[in-house]
Length: 559
Image (cartoon, rainbow, N blue to C red):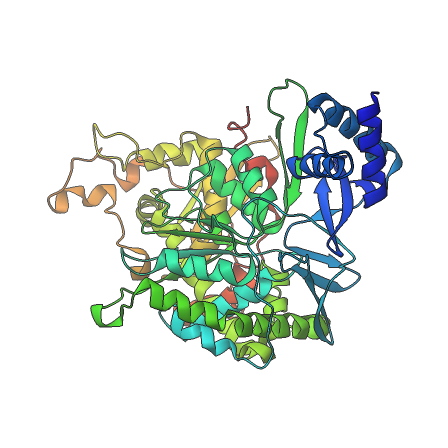
């Protein structure tokens, strides 16, 4: 090692507080700068510039590039092999029952949130990192009201306002799961503005809105460099991205090959709050919808509009007090969450418990949250069914078969194929084989149960797998679109030519597996029983074989 490199190493050791490595063995240095502590990766540009500045300060000359690289190599080795290991956090962290929110200001201050309150501290006990684009949060102020945010959001009703507040306080928490917030609305309904405002309250960034990532690596980079992921103006979610959103919302690992290598793999495990917005329906797959809060923003009339400058000026002035209210709510949740008792645990149970625990500081009751969340989930079931191309043909087939179907998924798919007009191609999303149909039915099962159609799977002793579908309750499905005409109804009126098939030509089922509706004695009572249990027991407590699993993920995008 040259004299220059040795001098650089010496200077670095005198000014650094600690050399250490993260859980992925990346070397870091904690340094002092104008009286506060900062954390920087040793192999990053900021630390390199720091070394050059130290050398120039002492020697009044610039070190060579080789000397800097040699010094970095030595310091990185000490950090990885001789330093302690710490987790590194972006914006939000948790330790020993406390939550830490990085203010990302010039003094590297953070907010420490505990069950008895919160305070701004200068030396947080966790290791925060500064990613490109991070913007500072304002110094929080007490004494405000969360209702100061309401006039700045274009929401449809009070239930949406309850859910927005719940989502925001969840975004301050260091652990998920986090429901994906999906914002829909026509052009000019302030979807992008709403998304920017919500992110700015917790995780402001110069790139507050992002376009759709092109692959898993892009999504990993976004999650590594930001706390809230905000994807703007989307028109469609491919299957791989929908599955990846599920993993990010509830926690799961990502793996992809490192750039410019054949064997080195990059592993990333994270949970992140996510906001999606677009005109078209985005979260149409049942697994993502089950993890989402979907909102439809109303159109803004001309007399409601204001200038951008005026709007953002009012928002910036209110941010410190709104942030203080969110911190109060998070503290309240920490104090109360272990005592929350829900009627039944929903799919996103931790989120629901957290929202109910924070409710006293957010201006709503536990029951108001339960009603709003359950109502939103009920809407999501309708969206899932509406978005599936097999839903209406399946309803017609059930009617043709007298309310009960039992077959292999391949046989069932052949029957459903008869509903495709002659000469037409299969619609987008139509299952291509029995295995895909099985996966589709599992995703639709919660929504089908909600309208009285029970779906179950079983294996015969011979190993043959059968799906049983039964109309348990006769219900109206006007909320999810019209029912497709059954094949025998084709001649009843004009329309595209269909392959002719009658009820007698379709093999009748011999065995049925039904879902019990308890003591309901007639169709009206049965319908009541279904809807009474729907929000918390029926579709939120999904059977184990109907849960979204890693095996369902499309990994073909990982090269």
